[in-house]
Image 1: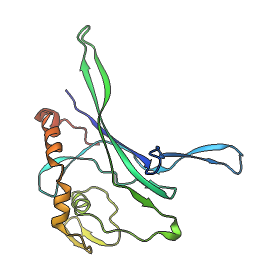
Image 2: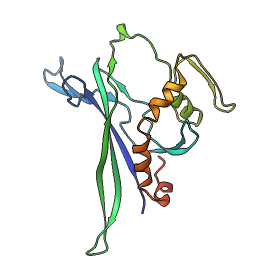
Image 3: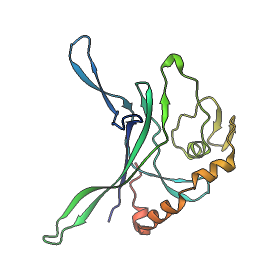
Length: 192
């Protein structure tokens, strides 16, 4: 049986908890209300097989091209779906189904106006690790990287011990969930 996981990101207003992935505004030229995307980029992705900071191979979702148009206080809501086939008991016909497994929300963040933008933040160790494995992640000017030589110079004030403690705080949940799938299922993950 082929296993397919899908992760969807949506933009949530931290004050109202409303989905702000699409916003409405009054068009000056057409004098009518139009809906436009506020969350730009690929918001639905499949996992990739990548090595984590601990060196173990795992399934990782990387949203490397998301951006937000309108300033405000937001968070991202990630919903994990299982897209699979289930054999029919009655007539041997397989039917496809999509079911939501779980969701999680990111920490709140601020989207600034262009004139108030404070500048890029330092990339995380995990982002650099994925970049070195070939994931196209924009790291900004604070990282000089050569993928062939695996050389990375990081200009950052990240305390690595604190980072690792926070990263694996809920590790038991993820490892329990990951163990629910057989080894065959883990190997048949779509690598788009």
